[in-house]
Length: 196
Image 1 (tube, helix red, strand yellow):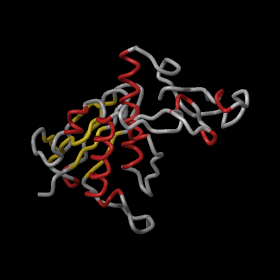
Image 2 (cartoon, rainbow, N blue to C red):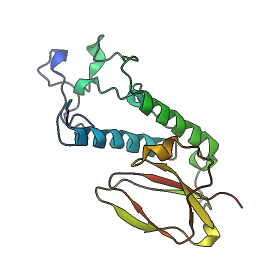
Image 3 (cartoon, rainbow, N blue to C red):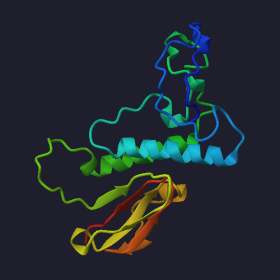
Image 4 (spheres, helix red, strand yellow):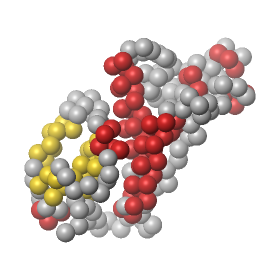
Protein backbone atom coordinates (compact mmCIF):
# COMPACT_ATOMS: atom_id res chain seq x y z
CA UNK A 1 0.00 0.00 0.00
CA UNK A 2 3.03 2.32 0.17
CA UNK A 3 4.88 1.60 -3.06
CA UNK A 4 3.87 1.07 -6.68
CA UNK A 5 7.40 0.66 -8.02
CA UNK A 6 10.20 -1.59 -6.83
CA UNK A 7 12.91 0.14 -4.84
CA UNK A 8 15.73 -2.37 -4.95
CA UNK A 9 18.58 0.14 -5.34
CA UNK A 10 20.29 -1.15 -2.18
CA UNK A 11 20.74 -4.58 -3.83
CA UNK A 12 23.52 -3.22 -6.07
CA UNK A 13 21.95 -4.24 -9.39
CA UNK A 14 20.76 -0.79 -10.55
CA UNK A 15 17.19 -1.58 -9.43
CA UNK A 16 16.96 -4.25 -12.17
CA UNK A 17 16.47 -7.28 -9.89
CA UNK A 18 13.14 -8.42 -8.52
CA UNK A 19 9.85 -8.31 -10.36
CA UNK A 20 9.19 -5.00 -12.09
CA UNK A 21 5.38 -5.24 -11.81
CA UNK A 22 4.46 -5.12 -8.14
CA UNK A 23 0.70 -5.26 -8.78
CA UNK A 24 0.36 -2.68 -6.04
CA UNK A 25 -1.07 0.79 -5.51
CA UNK A 26 0.55 3.38 -3.27
CA UNK A 27 -2.77 5.15 -2.48
CA UNK A 28 -1.48 8.43 -3.93
CA UNK A 29 2.10 8.84 -2.71
CA UNK A 30 5.20 6.73 -3.24
CA UNK A 31 6.71 5.71 0.09
CA UNK A 32 6.25 7.34 3.48
CA UNK A 33 3.97 10.39 3.66
CA UNK A 34 2.56 12.78 6.23
CA UNK A 35 -0.75 12.98 4.35
CA UNK A 36 -3.36 11.81 6.89
CA UNK A 37 -5.90 10.81 4.23
CA UNK A 38 -3.39 8.62 2.37
CA UNK A 39 -2.21 7.00 5.61
CA UNK A 40 -5.82 6.30 6.63
CA UNK A 41 -6.54 4.73 3.23
CA UNK A 42 -3.38 2.62 3.43
CA UNK A 43 -4.43 1.40 6.87
CA UNK A 44 -7.88 0.42 5.60
CA UNK A 45 -6.39 -1.33 2.57
CA UNK A 46 -4.04 -3.35 4.79
CA UNK A 47 -7.03 -4.50 6.80
CA UNK A 48 -8.99 -5.22 3.60
CA UNK A 49 -6.22 -7.47 2.29
CA UNK A 50 -5.81 -9.27 5.60
CA UNK A 51 -9.58 -9.78 5.80
CA UNK A 52 -9.69 -11.15 2.25
CA UNK A 53 -6.78 -13.47 3.01
CA UNK A 54 -8.17 -14.97 6.22
CA UNK A 55 -11.78 -15.27 5.04
CA UNK A 56 -10.96 -16.98 1.74
CA UNK A 57 -10.95 -20.71 1.08
CA UNK A 58 -7.64 -22.49 1.24
CA UNK A 59 -4.65 -22.14 3.51
CA UNK A 60 -3.86 -18.48 4.34
CA UNK A 61 -0.26 -17.63 3.49
CA UNK A 62 0.86 -14.55 5.43
CA UNK A 63 4.26 -13.07 4.64
CA UNK A 64 6.11 -12.51 7.90
CA UNK A 65 5.75 -8.84 8.76
CA UNK A 66 2.53 -8.12 6.85
CA UNK A 67 0.61 -8.34 10.11
CA UNK A 68 2.88 -5.63 11.52
CA UNK A 69 2.89 -3.24 8.54
CA UNK A 70 6.43 -4.10 7.41
CA UNK A 71 7.00 -2.65 3.91
CA UNK A 72 10.71 -3.45 3.31
CA UNK A 73 10.84 0.18 2.10
CA UNK A 74 9.63 -0.91 -1.31
CA UNK A 75 12.36 -3.50 -1.85
CA UNK A 76 10.66 -6.57 -3.32
CA UNK A 77 13.79 -8.71 -3.41
CA UNK A 78 15.55 -8.51 -0.05
CA UNK A 79 17.37 -11.85 -0.39
CA UNK A 80 20.74 -10.09 -0.02
CA UNK A 81 19.70 -7.68 2.72
CA UNK A 82 20.59 -8.66 6.27
CA UNK A 83 19.62 -5.28 7.74
CA UNK A 84 16.61 -3.07 8.52
CA UNK A 85 15.14 -3.70 5.04
CA UNK A 86 14.48 -7.34 5.84
CA UNK A 87 14.46 -7.32 9.63
CA UNK A 88 11.19 -6.72 11.44
CA UNK A 89 11.47 -4.02 14.07
CA UNK A 90 8.94 -5.28 16.61
CA UNK A 91 9.30 -2.11 18.69
CA UNK A 92 7.93 -0.06 15.76
CA UNK A 93 5.42 -2.71 14.66
CA UNK A 94 1.81 -1.66 14.16
CA UNK A 95 0.35 -3.22 17.33
CA UNK A 96 -3.26 -2.44 16.43
CA UNK A 97 -2.88 -4.13 13.03
CA UNK A 98 -1.33 -7.14 14.74
CA UNK A 99 -4.28 -7.33 17.15
CA UNK A 100 -6.79 -7.11 14.30
CA UNK A 101 -4.90 -9.85 12.44
CA UNK A 102 -5.10 -12.00 15.56
CA UNK A 103 -8.88 -11.42 15.71
CA UNK A 104 -9.21 -12.43 12.08
CA UNK A 105 -7.31 -15.67 12.74
CA UNK A 106 -9.52 -16.36 15.75
CA UNK A 107 -12.68 -15.62 13.73
CA UNK A 108 -11.56 -17.98 10.97
CA UNK A 109 -10.97 -20.76 13.49
CA UNK A 110 -14.41 -20.21 15.06
CA UNK A 111 -16.24 -20.47 11.72
CA UNK A 112 -15.46 -23.69 9.84
CA UNK A 113 -17.15 -22.39 6.68
CA UNK A 114 -13.85 -20.59 5.97
CA UNK A 115 -11.81 -23.80 6.26
CA UNK A 116 -13.52 -26.46 4.17
CA UNK A 117 -11.99 -29.88 4.64
CA UNK A 118 -13.47 -31.33 1.42
CA UNK A 119 -13.60 -30.36 -2.23
CA UNK A 120 -16.57 -28.37 -3.47
CA UNK A 121 -19.22 -30.74 -4.83
CA UNK A 122 -21.36 -28.34 -6.87
CA UNK A 123 -24.02 -28.18 -4.17
CA UNK A 124 -25.21 -25.04 -2.38
CA UNK A 125 -23.64 -24.40 0.98
CA UNK A 126 -26.06 -22.86 3.44
CA UNK A 127 -24.02 -20.53 5.54
CA UNK A 128 -24.97 -17.91 8.04
CA UNK A 129 -22.41 -15.35 7.06
CA UNK A 130 -21.27 -13.37 4.05
CA UNK A 131 -18.89 -10.57 3.20
CA UNK A 132 -19.01 -7.53 0.94
CA UNK A 133 -15.74 -6.87 -0.91
CA UNK A 134 -13.93 -3.53 -1.12
CA UNK A 135 -14.85 -1.18 -3.99
CA UNK A 136 -13.68 2.35 -4.78
CA UNK A 137 -17.08 3.86 -4.00
CA UNK A 138 -19.87 3.03 -1.51
CA UNK A 139 -22.11 0.06 -2.37
CA UNK A 140 -25.73 -0.40 -1.33
CA UNK A 141 -26.83 -3.98 -0.83
CA UNK A 142 -29.76 -5.95 0.55
CA UNK A 143 -29.46 -8.69 3.14
CA UNK A 144 -30.71 -12.17 2.22
CA UNK A 145 -34.25 -13.36 2.80
CA UNK A 146 -35.36 -14.88 6.11
CA UNK A 147 -34.61 -18.50 5.19
CA UNK A 148 -30.92 -17.61 5.42
CA UNK A 149 -31.30 -15.70 8.68
CA UNK A 150 -33.89 -13.52 10.37
CA UNK A 151 -31.35 -11.19 11.91
CA UNK A 152 -27.87 -10.16 10.79
CA UNK A 153 -25.20 -8.41 12.80
CA UNK A 154 -22.13 -6.66 11.48
CA UNK A 155 -19.16 -8.12 13.27
CA UNK A 156 -16.36 -6.83 11.07
CA UNK A 157 -16.14 -3.56 9.15
CA UNK A 158 -12.77 -2.38 7.90
CA UNK A 159 -14.14 1.17 7.57
CA UNK A 160 -15.00 1.12 11.27
CA UNK A 161 -12.22 -0.64 13.23
CA UNK A 162 -14.22 -0.24 16.46
CA UNK A 163 -16.55 -2.92 15.10
CA UNK A 164 -13.54 -5.10 14.43
CA UNK A 165 -12.36 -4.82 18.02
CA UNK A 166 -15.81 -5.10 19.61
CA UNK A 167 -16.91 -8.42 21.08
CA UNK A 168 -17.98 -10.50 18.12
CA UNK A 169 -20.70 -12.23 20.12
CA UNK A 170 -22.55 -9.00 20.97
CA UNK A 171 -26.19 -9.07 19.85
CA UNK A 172 -26.72 -5.34 19.41
CA UNK A 173 -27.23 -3.65 16.07
CA UNK A 174 -29.02 -6.62 14.55
CA UNK A 175 -30.33 -5.95 11.02
CA UNK A 176 -33.46 -7.73 9.85
CA UNK A 177 -33.60 -9.95 6.77
CA UNK A 178 -33.95 -8.04 3.50
CA UNK A 179 -32.91 -4.77 5.10
CA UNK A 180 -30.59 -2.51 3.14
CA UNK A 181 -27.07 -1.53 4.14
CA UNK A 182 -24.34 0.59 2.63
CA UNK A 183 -20.71 -0.51 2.63
CA UNK A 184 -18.29 2.44 2.71
CA UNK A 185 -15.82 2.85 -0.12
CA UNK A 186 -12.79 0.57 0.05
CA UNK A 187 -14.14 -1.50 2.91
CA UNK A 188 -15.20 -5.02 3.73
CA UNK A 189 -18.16 -5.83 5.93
CA UNK A 190 -18.71 -9.25 7.48
CA UNK A 191 -22.18 -10.12 8.74
CA UNK A 192 -23.31 -13.13 10.72
CA UNK A 193 -26.79 -14.42 11.43
CA UNK A 194 -26.87 -15.80 14.97
CA UNK A 195 -28.41 -19.25 15.24
CA UNK A 196 -32.00 -19.17 16.52
